[in-house]
Image (cartoon, rainbow, N blue to C red):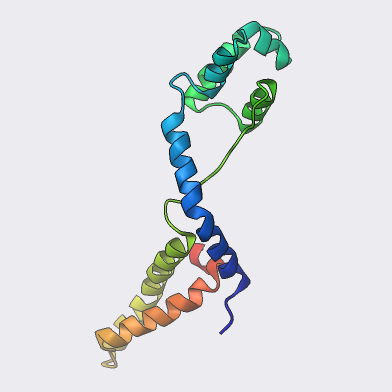
Length: 156
């Protein structure tokens, strides 16, 4: 049986995931206490007034606001991009899954399959046509495999 294109893309992403997770850990552990903008600005000896000018801002208080907003998480991606450019730095943004995408899909597919099979097995049991536990698990497994091949069905 052919592996669907979506699953191949997931497998390719999952192959790179350990590298992404290591990089994410380095970034998490290396965040300067005062934030990246402040840390790089101070290290380069750029005053708030100079950075303000490089960003095209009118007053240095805006740089104070920018640095505070970065620390609190209230800064926009666009603003971070502009600040990185003004500091001659590269802006990096990522969302790194905690587990392999395939594992996330598999767990979700099993959850959805169990939800879909439960009322059917209950109804069959009431009609004295119940399945054994092994048969029920086999049905769940088959449905989960089918759902994994159509991941868009997992999130409705």
